[in-house]
Image (cartoon, rainbow, N blue to C red):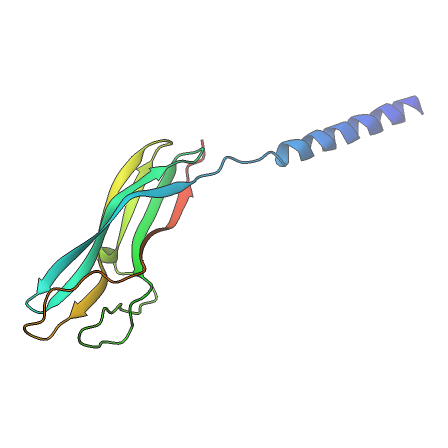
Length: 147
């Protein structure tokens, strides 16, 4: 009977230790945008576009890869109207509308740039526009690198 109790205690201790190891908190990846900048660019004679650039810093506990950065104009319309900022409603951003950073180690940062957050068509003779409100640069996704 004593051997059975020892065996049972051993099995319980083994199961408990496996549970504790499997519940261990995994290291998290975290990136933040630093130095975001929006650039107004004259695209054609009467049209303008907004490009984005800046840096993304890895402030997490592990290295990250395939960091996708893009921009949005939350106050822009999706209807083409002369004199109003417009976005192209798409299911997924085109390659020139986002930047993919291949790898960022912990504590480091990398530069990014992309084009066409929003567009504006003016009538001939209208003055250059100001940037619209509610512009933002976001990290769409990233993957962590398993150590």
